[in-house]
Length: 220
Image (cartoon, rainbow, N blue to C red; front, side, top):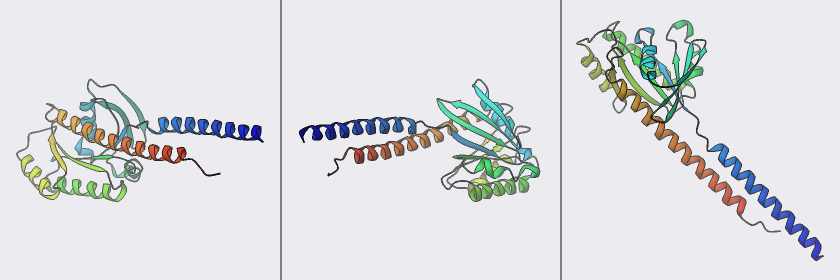
Protein backbone atom coordinates (compact mmCIF):
# COMPACT_ATOMS: atom_id res chain seq x y z
CA UNK A 1 0.00 0.00 0.00
CA UNK A 2 2.82 2.40 0.87
CA UNK A 3 4.45 1.64 -2.46
CA UNK A 4 1.19 2.44 -4.28
CA UNK A 5 0.92 5.78 -2.45
CA UNK A 6 4.49 6.64 -3.43
CA UNK A 7 3.81 5.81 -7.07
CA UNK A 8 0.63 7.92 -7.08
CA UNK A 9 2.40 10.80 -5.33
CA UNK A 10 5.28 10.69 -7.81
CA UNK A 11 2.85 10.62 -10.72
CA UNK A 12 1.03 13.72 -9.48
CA UNK A 13 4.36 15.47 -8.96
CA UNK A 14 5.40 14.75 -12.56
CA UNK A 15 2.05 15.98 -13.86
CA UNK A 16 2.35 19.14 -11.78
CA UNK A 17 5.83 19.88 -13.12
CA UNK A 18 4.76 19.18 -16.70
CA UNK A 19 1.71 21.35 -16.27
CA UNK A 20 3.78 24.20 -14.87
CA UNK A 21 6.31 23.82 -17.68
CA UNK A 22 3.55 23.88 -20.30
CA UNK A 23 1.90 26.86 -18.63
CA UNK A 24 5.20 28.75 -18.56
CA UNK A 25 5.91 28.02 -22.22
CA UNK A 26 2.38 29.02 -23.16
CA UNK A 27 2.74 32.26 -21.23
CA UNK A 28 6.05 33.02 -22.95
CA UNK A 29 4.43 32.41 -26.32
CA UNK A 30 1.35 34.54 -25.62
CA UNK A 31 3.37 37.47 -24.27
CA UNK A 32 4.89 38.06 -27.69
CA UNK A 33 3.48 41.41 -28.82
CA UNK A 34 2.59 41.68 -32.48
CA UNK A 35 3.27 44.89 -34.47
CA UNK A 36 0.48 47.44 -34.21
CA UNK A 37 -1.65 47.48 -37.34
CA UNK A 38 -2.10 50.95 -38.84
CA UNK A 39 -4.27 51.62 -41.89
CA UNK A 40 -3.96 54.71 -44.10
CA UNK A 41 -7.25 55.86 -45.62
CA UNK A 42 -8.23 58.65 -47.98
CA UNK A 43 -8.96 59.56 -51.58
CA UNK A 44 -6.16 59.28 -54.20
CA UNK A 45 -5.59 63.07 -54.09
CA UNK A 46 -4.53 62.81 -50.44
CA UNK A 47 -1.16 61.29 -51.41
CA UNK A 48 -1.03 58.76 -48.60
CA UNK A 49 1.89 56.98 -50.26
CA UNK A 50 4.05 60.12 -50.05
CA UNK A 51 3.36 60.35 -46.32
CA UNK A 52 4.49 56.75 -45.78
CA UNK A 53 7.55 57.27 -47.97
CA UNK A 54 8.52 60.31 -45.90
CA UNK A 55 8.04 58.41 -42.64
CA UNK A 56 10.17 55.51 -43.90
CA UNK A 57 13.23 57.63 -44.58
CA UNK A 58 16.21 56.35 -42.62
CA UNK A 59 14.11 53.45 -41.27
CA UNK A 60 14.35 49.76 -42.12
CA UNK A 61 11.18 48.20 -43.48
CA UNK A 62 9.78 45.27 -45.43
CA UNK A 63 7.27 45.86 -48.24
CA UNK A 64 4.92 43.29 -49.72
CA UNK A 65 2.41 43.91 -52.47
CA UNK A 66 -1.31 43.33 -51.95
CA UNK A 67 -4.04 43.95 -54.51
CA UNK A 68 -5.48 47.35 -53.67
CA UNK A 69 -3.11 47.79 -50.75
CA UNK A 70 0.55 47.53 -49.77
CA UNK A 71 2.14 46.70 -46.46
CA UNK A 72 5.05 48.47 -44.76
CA UNK A 73 6.70 47.03 -41.65
CA UNK A 74 8.27 49.98 -39.86
CA UNK A 75 9.98 50.48 -36.52
CA UNK A 76 9.58 53.95 -34.98
CA UNK A 77 11.34 54.69 -31.70
CA UNK A 78 11.58 50.97 -30.96
CA UNK A 79 7.89 50.34 -31.66
CA UNK A 80 6.93 47.96 -34.47
CA UNK A 81 4.18 49.16 -36.78
CA UNK A 82 2.45 47.37 -39.64
CA UNK A 83 1.23 50.16 -41.92
CA UNK A 84 -1.26 49.30 -44.65
CA UNK A 85 -1.57 51.83 -47.46
CA UNK A 86 -5.01 51.28 -48.98
CA UNK A 87 -6.03 52.39 -52.45
CA UNK A 88 -8.62 55.16 -52.52
CA UNK A 89 -10.02 54.37 -55.96
CA UNK A 90 -13.61 53.18 -56.16
CA UNK A 91 -12.49 50.03 -57.98
CA UNK A 92 -10.66 48.88 -54.85
CA UNK A 93 -13.18 50.16 -52.27
CA UNK A 94 -14.69 46.71 -51.69
CA UNK A 95 -11.29 45.35 -50.63
CA UNK A 96 -10.55 48.03 -48.04
CA UNK A 97 -12.76 46.62 -45.21
CA UNK A 98 -10.49 43.57 -45.02
CA UNK A 99 -7.53 45.78 -44.16
CA UNK A 100 -9.47 48.05 -41.80
CA UNK A 101 -11.11 45.25 -39.78
CA UNK A 102 -8.32 44.55 -37.28
CA UNK A 103 -6.50 47.89 -37.40
CA UNK A 104 -5.59 49.49 -34.08
CA UNK A 105 -4.93 52.93 -35.62
CA UNK A 106 -6.69 54.52 -38.61
CA UNK A 107 -4.99 57.50 -40.25
CA UNK A 108 -7.55 59.39 -42.34
CA UNK A 109 -5.84 61.68 -44.85
CA UNK A 110 -7.41 64.54 -46.80
CA UNK A 111 -6.26 67.28 -49.17
CA UNK A 112 -7.51 70.69 -50.29
CA UNK A 113 -6.58 70.02 -53.90
CA UNK A 114 -10.23 69.53 -54.87
CA UNK A 115 -11.61 72.28 -52.66
CA UNK A 116 -12.90 72.74 -49.12
CA UNK A 117 -16.24 70.97 -49.56
CA UNK A 118 -14.62 67.94 -51.17
CA UNK A 119 -12.04 67.76 -48.38
CA UNK A 120 -14.61 67.82 -45.58
CA UNK A 121 -16.83 65.34 -47.40
CA UNK A 122 -13.91 62.97 -48.00
CA UNK A 123 -12.82 63.08 -44.36
CA UNK A 124 -16.39 62.47 -43.18
CA UNK A 125 -16.91 59.56 -45.56
CA UNK A 126 -13.72 57.79 -44.50
CA UNK A 127 -14.40 58.46 -40.82
CA UNK A 128 -17.82 56.83 -41.14
CA UNK A 129 -16.20 54.00 -43.09
CA UNK A 130 -13.90 53.33 -40.12
CA UNK A 131 -16.82 53.44 -37.68
CA UNK A 132 -18.67 50.85 -39.74
CA UNK A 133 -15.79 48.46 -40.48
CA UNK A 134 -13.10 48.78 -37.81
CA UNK A 135 -12.93 47.51 -34.25
CA UNK A 136 -14.58 49.66 -31.59
CA UNK A 137 -11.32 50.62 -29.87
CA UNK A 138 -9.57 51.83 -33.03
CA UNK A 139 -7.81 55.19 -32.66
CA UNK A 140 -8.50 57.68 -35.46
CA UNK A 141 -5.94 60.28 -36.54
CA UNK A 142 -6.96 62.99 -39.01
CA UNK A 143 -4.24 64.37 -41.27
CA UNK A 144 -4.46 67.24 -43.75
CA UNK A 145 -1.73 66.64 -46.32
CA UNK A 146 -0.75 69.72 -48.31
CA UNK A 147 2.27 68.57 -50.24
CA UNK A 148 1.69 70.77 -53.30
CA UNK A 149 1.01 74.22 -51.88
CA UNK A 150 0.66 76.35 -48.75
CA UNK A 151 -2.98 77.18 -49.27
CA UNK A 152 -4.45 80.02 -47.14
CA UNK A 153 -7.46 77.76 -46.66
CA UNK A 154 -5.48 75.27 -44.59
CA UNK A 155 -6.21 76.94 -41.25
CA UNK A 156 -9.88 77.33 -42.14
CA UNK A 157 -10.06 73.65 -42.98
CA UNK A 158 -8.27 72.73 -39.76
CA UNK A 159 -10.76 74.81 -37.73
CA UNK A 160 -13.70 73.08 -39.40
CA UNK A 161 -12.22 69.66 -38.71
CA UNK A 162 -11.43 70.58 -35.09
CA UNK A 163 -15.06 71.58 -34.55
CA UNK A 164 -16.35 68.32 -35.97
CA UNK A 165 -13.77 65.95 -34.52
CA UNK A 166 -13.10 67.33 -31.06
CA UNK A 167 -10.91 65.12 -28.93
CA UNK A 168 -9.26 63.42 -31.90
CA UNK A 169 -5.64 63.89 -32.93
CA UNK A 170 -5.62 66.30 -35.87
CA UNK A 171 -2.71 67.84 -37.75
CA UNK A 172 -1.57 69.14 -41.11
CA UNK A 173 1.63 67.93 -42.73
CA UNK A 174 3.72 68.84 -45.73
CA UNK A 175 5.62 65.91 -47.22
CA UNK A 176 7.72 68.18 -49.42
CA UNK A 177 9.39 70.19 -46.66
CA UNK A 178 8.78 67.63 -43.91
CA UNK A 179 6.62 69.92 -41.79
CA UNK A 180 5.07 67.97 -38.89
CA UNK A 181 6.15 64.60 -40.32
CA UNK A 182 8.25 63.91 -37.24
CA UNK A 183 5.31 64.78 -35.01
CA UNK A 184 3.07 62.38 -36.93
CA UNK A 185 5.63 59.57 -36.65
CA UNK A 186 6.04 60.15 -32.92
CA UNK A 187 2.28 60.21 -32.38
CA UNK A 188 1.88 56.88 -34.18
CA UNK A 189 4.65 55.37 -32.05
CA UNK A 190 3.23 56.74 -28.79
CA UNK A 191 -0.28 55.45 -29.48
CA UNK A 192 1.05 52.05 -30.55
CA UNK A 193 3.30 51.85 -27.47
CA UNK A 194 0.35 52.55 -25.18
CA UNK A 195 -1.77 49.92 -26.92
CA UNK A 196 1.00 47.31 -26.82
CA UNK A 197 1.64 47.93 -23.13
CA UNK A 198 -2.05 47.45 -22.42
CA UNK A 199 -2.10 44.17 -24.35
CA UNK A 200 0.99 42.99 -22.44
CA UNK A 201 -0.66 43.87 -19.11
CA UNK A 202 -3.84 42.00 -20.04
CA UNK A 203 -1.91 38.90 -21.14
CA UNK A 204 0.14 38.85 -17.95
CA UNK A 205 -3.01 39.18 -15.84
CA UNK A 206 -4.67 36.26 -17.60
CA UNK A 207 -1.52 34.12 -17.40
CA UNK A 208 -1.06 34.89 -13.70
CA UNK A 209 -4.66 33.98 -12.95
CA UNK A 210 -4.27 30.74 -14.92
CA UNK A 211 -1.13 29.80 -13.00
CA UNK A 212 -2.87 30.49 -9.68
CA UNK A 213 -5.70 28.18 -10.62
CA UNK A 214 -3.30 25.46 -11.80
CA UNK A 215 -1.29 25.64 -8.56
CA UNK A 216 -4.32 25.23 -6.28
CA UNK A 217 -4.31 21.77 -4.63
CA UNK A 218 -7.21 19.57 -5.64
CA UNK A 219 -8.99 17.40 -3.21
CA UNK A 220 -8.71 13.64 -3.86
